[in-house]
Length: 327
Image 1: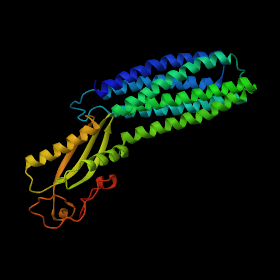
Image 2: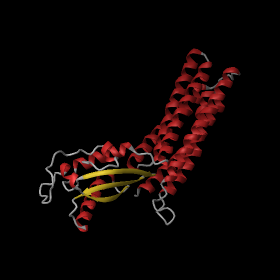
Image 3: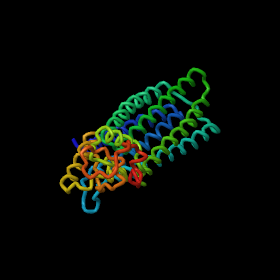
Image 4: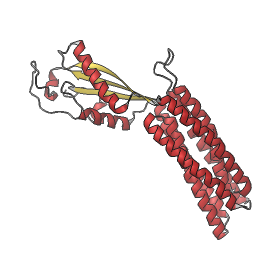
C-alpha cells in the first residue's frame, strides 16, 4: 500500500474515533457539570473538525502529480496542520474563559464517578490511536498524521489530569480544584496548538528539515565513493510525506555523460535505500577544478595537479553551503 493510501486510512480512523469520543465526553459533562470535563469535550470538538480537515488534506496529498501541481499536492497537509493548530489554540482560549467564569460563578458538581468512567474510556482509546498515528507518521513522513497523533496523545494526558482532579475533589470535597485543573490545561492545550502551528508554517515556508539533513549526511558519509569529490548546495523541501532534495555533486571533469549519469544513479540508489521512494533527488553535476585536487582522494587520477591533502567529512553545515569545498 502506498504512503498516501496509508495516511488516508489512518485519518479516516481518527475522524470516526473523534466523533464517537466527543459524544462520550459531552455526555460526561452533562452528567457531572464539571468544567474540566468541558475542557476535554471542547478539545474533542476540535478533534472532530481537525480530523475531517486532515482526512481531506491527506486525500489531496495522495493525489498523483498533474500539470498544475508538478511536485504533487503534499502542501495541503501543512495547511491542514496549521488549521488544526489554530483551532486548538482557540479551544484553549475558550476553556480559559470558561474556567475563570466558573471560578467566579461556580456550578455544583454531581455524579463524578460516572463521568470519570466515561472519560476514562476515551483516554484509553485516544492513547491507542495516537500512538498508532505516530508510528504511521514515522513511516510515511506525514505531518498531518503526526499532528493528529500528537493531538490525541496530548488529549489523553489532559483527560488523565482531569480524572486525577476529579478524584481529588471526591477525596477533599474542594470543588474549586475542578476549575484550577481547567485553567492549567487551557494553557497546556494552547502550547500544544502553537507547536503544531509552528511546525506547519515551517513546512509552508520551506524551512530546512534539519533531522533529514543529519540523516542524509550520515548515510552519504558511510557510502561515499571516491568519485564523489564534493557535495554542496543541498536543499531539502517537504511536500507532505514527500521529500525533494536538490544538490550539487562534483565529479572528475574528464567523466563523459554516461559515467556522470552512473555516479548520480548510484548516489540516488543509496539515498532511496535508506529513505524509500518518498525522497526524490535532483542532482546538478559540477566538474572538478584545480583546487579540488587537494580534497580528492581518487587514487587512479592521471590528471592530478596537486597532491591530496585532506578529506572533508560531509556535515550538515558544509553540505548546505553554496561554496565549493577546497577553494
